[in-house]
Picture 1 (cartoon, rainbow, N blue to C red):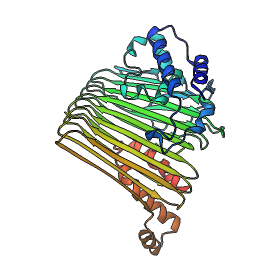
Picture 2: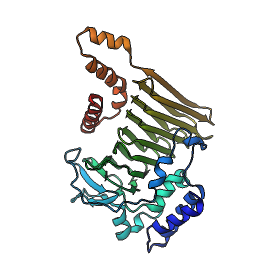
Picture 3: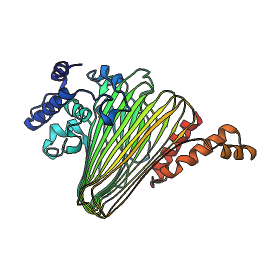
Picture 4: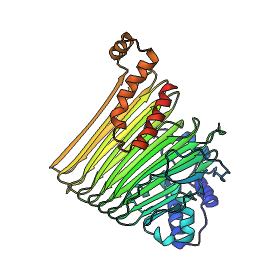
Length: 419
């Protein structure tokens, strides 16, 4: 599709608004996407992932649906539900100092709280897919935590999809010393057997001493495409723990950009990807140590069966004045089939002297010696294989220190293995 065609499609689909700053922001994003279009495999960051399957769905915007959402994953959670990208339910009686609502409703009722933050992270501003999200997004969630607020209940966000293309735009603003746990759950409806597109963006601003735990579960339908971008800025002593579980979608990409901007900031990124058939999952990470005295950790592990294709692209950048940092990265993948494929590309770009950095990647097969040992102890082959697969990813799952959320993740992983 040419730039002129993109411009025409965008002109028809960019949401109208009476807010001048929002109109300018959307139009600027539309212009940026029209000038570049979708990245192809000549772009280094996309060399392993082909976006041709999503072209036909970019402007097939979903109109929403009436749904009966499934039960919550977590008991006593503060839960928002979106159906085809539009808010359909939200919790009452929020704790003091917590604002949790839909993006569209926030823009209509109190847009001032978003100005300067919405699409404010420079690292993703010019990227094509976040720009397209910024131009076309109609809803998403807004979580604002006042300084010092500690939310005891988990916050669960369900994005239920059935058709078309949705562009969730999510924003988390955590004040100084605030604490919360957020679960983003992307799920296809039971009655949907076709193709749809999700292109989501979540921006996180963590002020001094804030502590956030974010968990993302991707269970979109097998024929669909799921593109997700997470961008964060952390001030001094802020902590972010992020865990991604990728199970669904035929084409999935999880892109993360983190900027550690204050001394003592700490980011831990971990994830598990379980793929079969012809699924494709690309995890792309850029960790930027802007100042000294910051720490980061990455641990991604996957299991690939049949003709599945996994990708890990992790990069740690250390700026010239970022002395005394630690940045570690690990990617491990288990191949269950000789037709499965894994591309792993860990990178370090270090411009400072006093640093501790490491990266590693391993790709291997199921341990036949271990399997034989379990079989000789009377364990059936299917159960023995599942035990070895569980042992392979249990260390990464161990980064989840919330018992209830860990229980949900364990159950989902067990279901995949049992199948």
